[in-house]
Image 1 (tube, one colour):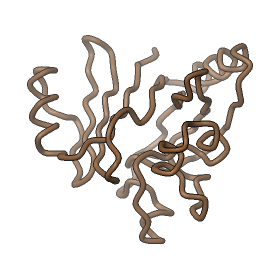
Image 2: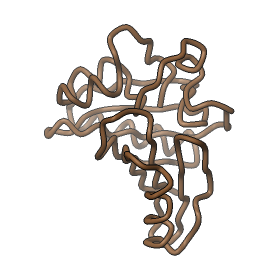
Image 3: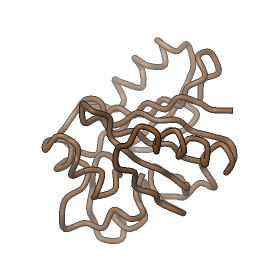
Image 4: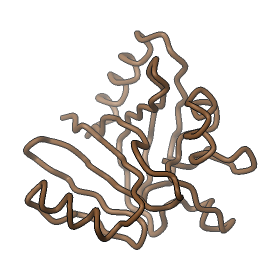
Length: 165
């Protein structure tokens, strides 16, 4: 079963956790010092926020799926849209290890379809090892197609985004 995914960059994580907890009438399923996530059933959504850069606003949208078959189906849908697709196997970001497909819509909004395989203890393993902090983890080829502000916040040219969310 598919679950809509929304990720928003926020300036004040605690204030936003309070706001979205009230809005959703639920506490987050995951809370870290720079990240929170709600796994809601009504509506069925994976709603995440992070405070890793000074940039705020929509980070990316997507669909979380439960199986490799559903992920393949989502990739087929993306292919029909005839826009660039970036595939990541075993990506380690947003405190999770996942298989993913990324694209951008005609407005430049990043879209992610992914299957979570496991949890990890850091937001992004490679960035944590290198001491780098970024907002999202859109892979570099997709990020360059996103509006310049978002690409700079998500994927600095010097960083390797092959294992990011």
